[in-house]
Length: 180
Image (cartoon, rainbow, N blue to C red; front, side, top):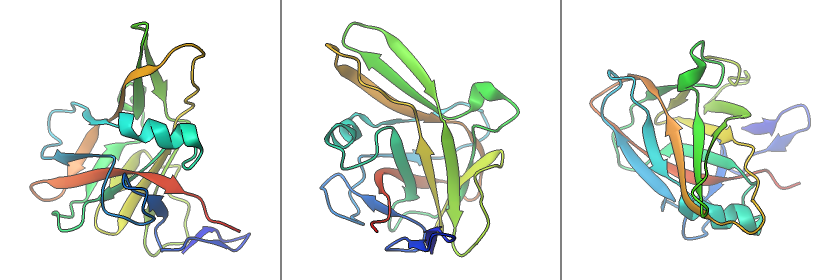
């Protein structure tokens, strides 16, 4: 219910707030979506999140931040992904940026957590991120624009650890912080 219960900063909707690709608060048009169908190969799942870059640049969404949630009407998983605290750092969440000059940059998450509704515990220190029917995940990367260069490709990579059910369709949205 609360972004920060000590400060009484509440979400508009329990489990977090977001903006969709159409600019609608709590809308259902993701900036990117992927169906996760397997967690057995330890291969990362990749979302093309280049459309979210405009929201970061405009300031409507905090730069480098993403919210993951199960798409409405889709099988609800959940899917467990390696977090930044996972013992194998090579499978931690990454933001892969390809710049107009051909340089490729791989950023590690500086923060990640998931929301389990209802809970009052901080779930950001564990080795897994979970996304499912009542589980949304929030990630932040240290993205900074490079003067005189544009981003030609932007991808979020997460490594699935366990999938409950046959598949889950997960969308990427722009997180919105509570308004005072």
